[in-house]
Structures are given as structure tokens and as C-alpha cells.
Image (cartoon, rainbow, N blue to C red; front, side):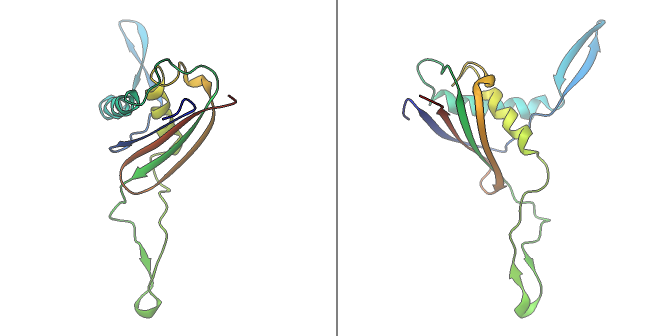
Length: 145
């Protein structure tokens, strides 16, 4: 870890941070997540690993984020086409749920008040999702220093 860059890997199934749902209780509106259990566990896992790499003081100013999400390959997705001599392996892309933007939001919220003060400091994000070992590889960089 340098004072300009922090890298770490969180293992586990990435959980997207879905839209908040509005509910009414005791005549007041409340916001809540649709899947609080798995999302809370995932965010805690990311924050816990990030904490072991956290700077002594929260970063101020602009930061950039690189995220590489690994997702389990579904058994129902074919990896080959054709038969006999014409059979060939094909590249399978994770073009199904979860949405990459919702995966990003869960990680951003997990890093807030651990690495940087507020996720509004993030000025650049590069994110990928692919089949592989479930988890996320994270790199947070200071920008412009």
C-alpha cells in the first residue's frame, strides 16, 4: 500500500445494492433495502477487508476506483457450440443480473468512512464483471496529487 493507492481482494458472492423501497410505518415514510441480509453481509465483508488496508486518516479530495467483480458461472450457460469436428469453445459473458452499477454502489457505500470521507469524492470508476472466483478486486487511487 502506498499513500496514493490501496489494493485488496474481497472473496464472497458480490451482492448488488438495489433501489430503496419506501414504506409507511406509524404515519411516517421510511426507506429500506429489498434484500437487507445478504447486502448487509456483503457490505460488512468489503468494509472489513478495506479496514485492514485503510489509511490512518480518511482520504480527502478526488479518488478513482477500479473494481473487478468475479461471479460464479451458471451451470445453464453453454461453453461450446457445434458438434464433432466443428465443436468449439465460446466466450461466455456475464450479461445477466446483477447489474454492474448496483454492484459498484454496494462497494462505494462500504468504502465510505473507511478509505474516504464520502463517495461523492469518487471522480472516476472502472468496473468489470466476469465469471471466476466470486468476489471483487479493489483498487482505490488518489487523483491529482
